[in-house]
Image 1 (cartoon, rainbow, N blue to C red):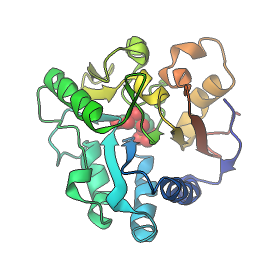
Image 2 (cartoon, rainbow, N blue to C red):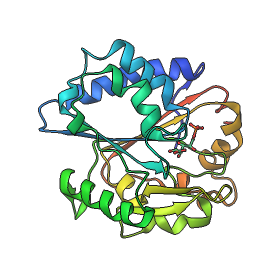
Image 3 (cartoon, rainbow, N blue to C red):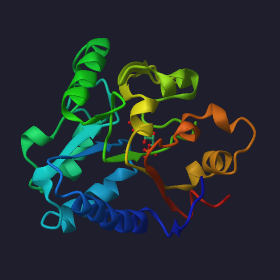
Image 4 (cartoon, helix red, strand yellow):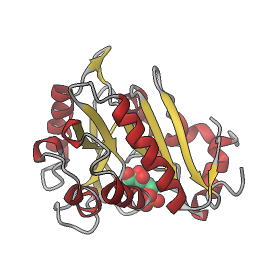
Length: 240
Ligand code: 6PG
């Protein structure tokens, strides 16, 4: 893993990746569908706002299908809902058909929703070696080295044979649904978006393979057929 370029801040990172995202989507525009797995949290907000502001007419949104790599088990209008954040920063502002938005239903019983969402992905996303192949996967990294909602205390989910699992946040106990490692590692493009000085220590440990790095889920993302790209700002990369 190596960081080719460091960006000034999240604003620049989001500007550059928005353009890259549009380029990748347009490269795939002859596909029937372009399946994108979104990350949640705060980092992608700026990216979504850029896409909303400048790319509605520069991306064939009718081809783009949005899925989530993880979701908090809360109502879809809850302030912590990843779907709600995406709706308010992206979905409301681009011409994407409702049927192209495949949200995780946070209101459902978690174990049942993990099964339901696994089936929704399997039934709609092309399979390779019996695993769904997303075209683009966006990922963030938590300060504890989690990615999606695969946390260090549950790292075995990286190799789970399920597409999705119901998990709990190790600190808050919040219930979540997450895709598993094999789904992420089967993607064509895996994009890490990492911003902020609070990520500097964990990024250093992962990128420079410091002792114990392999215990961080984000360090276990390695695409089988695809490409991993890093979009990191100077604050997050200050120790690299
Ligand atoms: C979530 C995310 C999670 C996120 C990291 C980084 O639901 O929280 O999917 O994996 O990407 O926690 O979050 P920030 O972007 O808020 O730092």
